[in-house]
Amino acid sequence: GQNIDQPTEMTATEGAIVQINCTYQTSGFNGLFWYQQHAGEAPTFLSYNVLDGLEEKGRFSSFLSRSKGYSYLLLKELQMKDSASYLCAVINYNQGGKLIFGQGTELSVKP
Amino acid sequence: AAGVIQSPRHLIKEKRETATLKCYPIPRHDTVYWYQQGPGQDPQFLISFYEKMQSDKGSIPDRFSAQQFSDYHSELNMSSLELGDSALYFCASSLGSSGRAHEQYFGPGTRLTVT
Image (tube, rainbow over all chains, first blue to last red):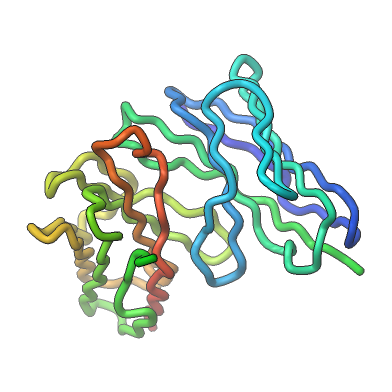
């Protein structure tokens, strides 16, 4: 079966650091994505991990451990505009390359 | 840079009517994916096409059908609409034949409201 878990919501303070965790159990794995989605808008690509380790891109970093079925998205120097839903998604090329999404984590950044 | 285009952006239909959603992928992209996102839900995969052939099928109702045309645009046809079909419908495209096939770019979505 396919199971992707992430916290439903998180709250953090402007300027702080927040870590959003994602665990997955899927029948196949060819990579893990993080997307940012503002309400009513399309998901926008943040990061892609296929090998274990940390990928850093500006204020955003993403980590993957395939043996543990675990990933996290780290957001530094939080800004108010970072308030959004963050979606963890797994891709499986044996299933046509579709993305299987988690429920998303609603992040609220407070002043 | 050109992005994925979806039309219409908003659509209001009544129960039992039909709707057609259109998706124009990024130029040279040969793979199209359709996702449905209900209120407060994560996107759910419906169906995908690679080089005009269906490549995978997800939780798409039998009342829905889709195809990819020779110019790679895709249409999602929805019949006998139900209230539960109200959702955001996203199309994503990628260059399936390359090593960067994982890079799926999402369109702005079509918001379908069934009344």
